[in-house]
Picture 1 (spheres, helix red, strand yellow):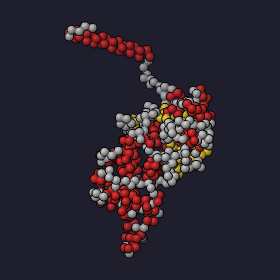
Picture 2 (spheres, helix red, strand yellow; picture 1 turned 180 degrees about the horizontal axis):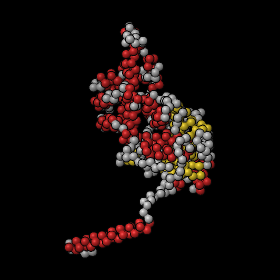
Picture 3 (tube, rainbow, N blue to C red; picture 1 turned 30 degrees about the vertical axis):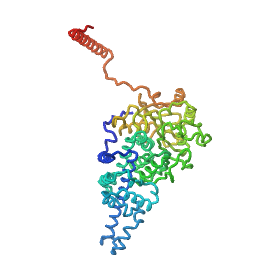
Picture 4 (cartoon, rainbow, N blue to C red; picture 1 turned 45 degrees about the horizontal axis):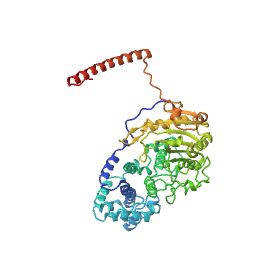
Length: 532
């Protein structure tokens, strides 16, 4: 296949005002930890979004019911006011009802008052009171003494500069972009802990682009802040579908991260089922009967304390009992257990999962291969993740790889080595470019036989299709580097004899120059009284 050129631009570089807004907001952080400040900022952005959506609808109702030329005109001011302030007028169009004390105009009017923290908390309580789906989701700690109220007021004024009611801004998903950008920046600021709730956008994009979740049930049992779901919905819309073409099912064990996910999805207007509360997918599966068409996940790497000692006889361990000290193969089998008969899963794991033979992991991997479940393996470059420096890879598994939707891929596995891809976003973090993502996903689509994707061919050093027999010869190790080989050296067209003549002449000239410099150094040292 053709090799795509690398872009010097990262996906983050395609953002504009988000970075400026983040820089301004971060200046107001003062001495507050990023983990704590995260909920302060994201809660206010969420409040601004809800209020702007409400105010836009409020204005349109006011215009329709106040205009004598309108078919909706209501002459009596009291009746008109009652209709405009009727919560059902908003809920019928999936717009959250915002009581007066929670509307952004009221919040901003009071931003400079010493009691602004209590005003914001009361607004959050009021929104939860009138919108059951948001019950116990919103942050409500703005009145606490440790939060500088002057800085809070400045932050409210800053977020107030976001114009979210403008229809053009809504179509561009301004608030979603800001929210997503802030999530990524908080993950970076928090370092290791931040990665627990945020998977880098470029990694999510690869998974979504390769799996192509057009229609059906999408599941993530360790969903973090919900990025997999957001990108899945974006993919559907980008390919002519509608929000709602896919059904969202998820689960998250961390209570604050679960709330972030609920807020993130609510901002996008995405219906979802993340369970009634946070819960651990191994110990308490909230979707025990779900069979998903698509599974996208980034579970914690090499998770040690996952409760395996109490789950030895679990029905999910069809291909072998996972070791108590590492949940990698428990996650893999959990995903497979929840796949529909034609389902496909794409997920991130530590590189060790591709080759480990400890505690029976090698035997489980062999069983997965012999069951013909493994479809594709992708080795990722380092420094992509905020939470760990452990090298990572992508697994793709499918229940039925001869289902007629694509070509019959039974007995084959595609290996992609993307370790050399990406550009450095900053000193510590790498990012895959749009071109990188397109190249990786495009290679997979040509290999599996997507309509119009073109013809697949192995590219030394990048991709190779291997049979199960070849993989068995390698001890069922799934590291792409074992199969893709070395990259072909580019042929410059110069005949070998001529090249050797030119290079030896060049070497001779360099050796002569080296000898001349040595002699000059000797003379200089001699002049100083030193002999060598």
